[in-house]
Image (cartoon, rainbow, N blue to C red; front, side, top):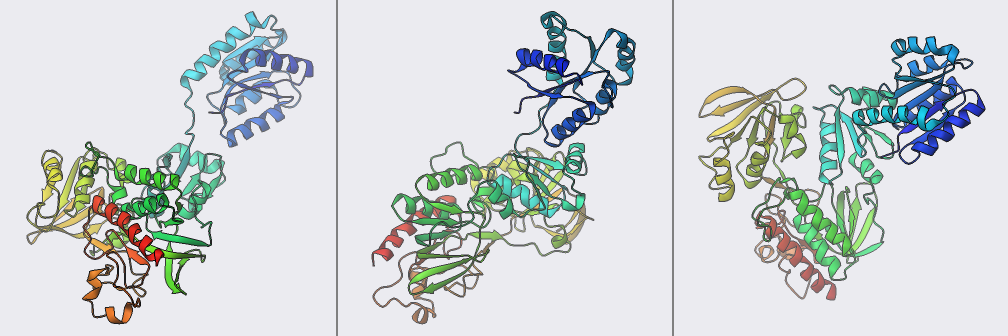
Length: 551
């Protein structure tokens, strides 16, 4: 935290030097002492401190000054620092004015000149005033601040981005938080500029993209090499595992993640069936441990950055990124993962990001305090989200089309949900419509031909997986649902004879129809949707990368 400021003001150079000297002698350890030779100069300094958000603890102003007198300076200072202690320096003849100023300017104290010796006539009074200021002072948040509207999809996107990278930030709702409105005015911005990100050094970003924020907080978004041994596309459990093992085995390894590390697993509030963590751990914690491990071992990670095209030139794989740059590599591991399918009901597109969320959306949990929320889906991700939301929401309703969760959710989660009083399972139920003006207000649910309208703070959707492979399906062979075919599965596909070009061998276990391009994790056909399985496949893919490079 920056040291609080003590500001002394006097037009007499000798008096000003004396008060500055005495203040520094006693208070320089804990405070920064500034001086001003006039009332106008003092107000300019006060405005600058306010704009830079530096704390001002105490102002000592001489009463008789040309231009602005001390009482007027102290009065106007309250506009910027209402809690700063205000002391008037007076001669004997100005005692009456000082007494009147106690009421008119809300003066905290007045001191007679001269104050010699300061140990008796100055320091005790100032120590008392500063102790009172310290007790009431609340230092401003020292990290990243995000100002926006609660129901803005752009604000939600930035909240999820910062939380996904474990960036400590303060959320300020422009409509309900006076501090947010004051900060925006101080930065000379308007509501149309929201969302606004204010970085720790004071830099302000109006309506930024996640990539713009990423470059400012130190994330890497451009590759440093012209050629890599292996590029891993996707930073979920499979991709991070491939990054760890590739780097640890001496390969020039690059991992590219388009959103936040961890994939769907990274949004899980608690993973309790992952080997080696008997008390469980959050998905974001697991992702960032793996991220740090990969970087420590020498992997390079670009995020957030997206691959938009992949082609093969003279045996090398050329990746085109969303910013137009290209990356060349000898081998590729596709770990693009899956995304949740969208819910096709009236009103859903309009309210997406404004009360309707795909995935856990942990950043919105606190806004659901003592409200009713609904979860669509019966898989493990839905169960983990329900348990997390139950600590904030009044009631959590899980909507499933079937009779029970047994076929789609792990037994430990079903047991936990059954023991949580404010979670209710609604079988044979689906969402028919979502309603609201600028944000979700109601959900319309259908249960066995009965339609019911219910108030809802939020709707979280977990309804199956769609592979994130649409951009690469023209290069490698996918099944009818878009999942990547690898290894022996390719041999039974009628396209194999025309797509597989290696004359001397069949595809390796995790290899696609293009030699040197491998797939692992949830986007691979036949993969098991579990974190441990994804980690195993990502690690195993590096073994086949080595075999391919040895050729």
